[in-house]
Image (cartoon, rainbow, N blue to C red; front, side):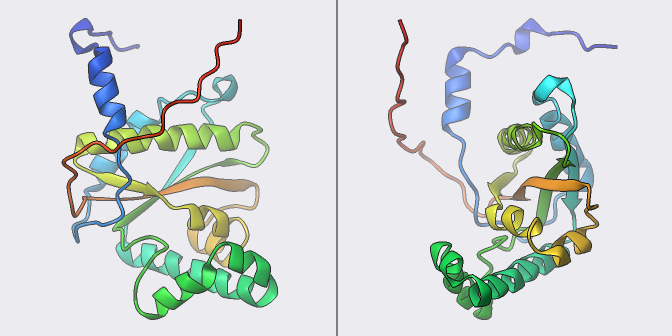
Length: 207
């Protein structure tokens, strides 16, 4: 049955503005694991995001163990080494040598030493799969601070997992599915005291 709508929980425009403007990407995490039930709750909230034709086709993969997150980072670095050797122009455009060098110095710029990684994926045949997963991940990013958690989009993971079979094999992603996006998740190491300035919205009213 559908849940009742509670008017007392209705957000004011000021609440919504503060909530959305205070969103921050988190790239430094505490060395503390997040209980699985907390991650499940946050994902359940994010699963309310709209999808094309209401297919609700988004699937989630939670990498719970930090050692597995680190293995994924290592796979991404292996992919970058391959790209550097075979597609040097692409490697230069994405500054891959810097990331490879950082990895050699035990600095993880791929998953930022995050304790967890959450991936959103769909069947390849879903035409709106990319938009559906991006929207769901945006919902997740916004929901996580209410659980005292932070996140950052893992763009290198998303890019690599669909081009480097060892990563898909490691994660158990089937050939008929595609990872559309991923975020690092954990307890923030630092807290922010100010809301950053943003560029003014570029708006045109068609009349």
